[in-house]
Length: 242
Image 1 (cartoon, rainbow, N blue to C red):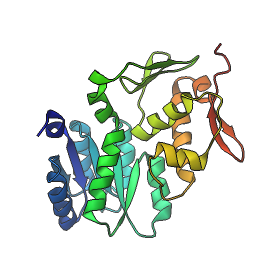
Image 2 (image 1 turned 90 degrees about the vertical axis):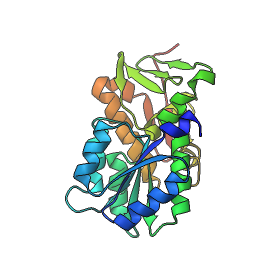
Image 3 (image 1 turned 45 degrees about the vertical axis):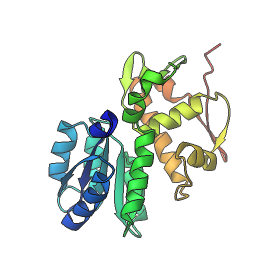
Image 4 (image 1 turned 60 degrees about the horizontal axis):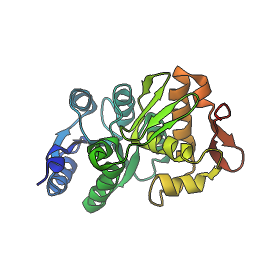
């Protein structure tokens, strides 16, 4: 077992012991360190006090639900989050993306599907990429109002670090690597999410909205660099550069 595997920590949050036990069994087979919480209160304490590589979070729980847990975590950390939702909870699913969820899985699910989705998100996450930086060529993209350090997986605006989720970061980097090129929402879903997602184009719009809000909090001009091309999609534009 490698050091990377030893350090990969996953938190499972679900009020059903059967689901926690099942997911723990499958994820531990992948050599992940797995911890679990049975409610939102415990999950928040654990998620904020411990640096997990990924969190599997149930949407519907008594007390503090998954949406609230996700929102609170996002105030402190950009830990990748997969939300578990019941079939037919599309409205809540969209709320989950607005709260900062990176992916979702519908119940009832196959444990093997969860493992595959966890692996896919870990590959794209900031923690995994950071562990690979020793063999990676340093890339820094500097623009008029923001800087993307892909080596450190970091975005700064006016020298202030912007706390982005893995998906928000990848979306910004994808657009910024091809300034002025217009990308359709369908293309962004396919390329940024790395697989055919569930086809809801609002996923892209929600992430763009959150990305703009975070950038605008420091410098509105940074947020304005992400342009909406009506009827098509989005593009990254740095009118002040060059």
